Amino acid sequence: MARMIAPKCKQCRRENMKLFLKGERCLTEKCAIERRAYPPGEHGRGRTKQSEYLLQLREKQKMRRYYGVLETQFRTYYDKASRKSGITGENFLRMLELRLDNVVYRLGFAASRSQARQLVRHNHFIVNGRKVNIPSYQVSADDVITLREGSGAKAVVTDATDLTASVAPWLQADHDNLQGTVLRLPDRADIDTPVQEQLIVEFYSK
Image (cartoon, rainbow, N blue to C red; front, top):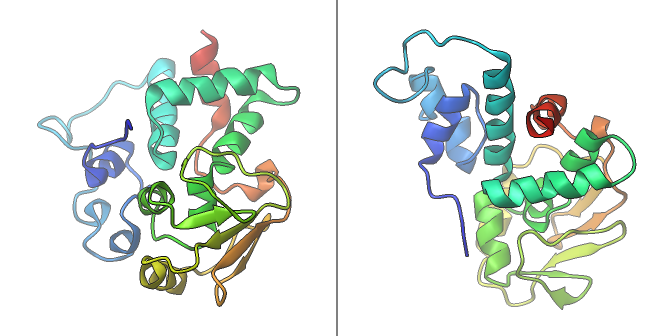
């Protein structure tokens, strides 16, 4: 299974913002952005010539890293979104939000999306009573996501819920029973991903 293996803190520094890729560490003073708020590499503190292409590329890379998706799969999501009716950028974001690993993270059952991805891959969650171990699985309205009975990750999931301040309005979480429900599909206003999706649409439209 292909996965992103680049150092997570360097990814945040490259995009010059917290992408919350390391869970609890991102909330402490150990966060790389707090200590070195400039891009990694020998020329990280140098001046960079801004251009329209660079802005679009950085926005695309930021969104891809935020959701932990590799380039080929990311482009596939865009192609599917462009064929749907409605606004392409919003369709794109909605498809990424509806990934099972992202929903597990949004429900507060994992400290980061990478941890959520690992928990899903190791069969710790069931959807509507059936085991699903595909992180990219697209959830639908009224789907119920539950920690599998007898799961060895219960302590990890419980610890993650303690870090959760709030849950997205399109989801409902029962942290006592470790169960979540997809109330509806998310609107753009429900998605707090710090990206300008229109720039990504322009990048791929060239």
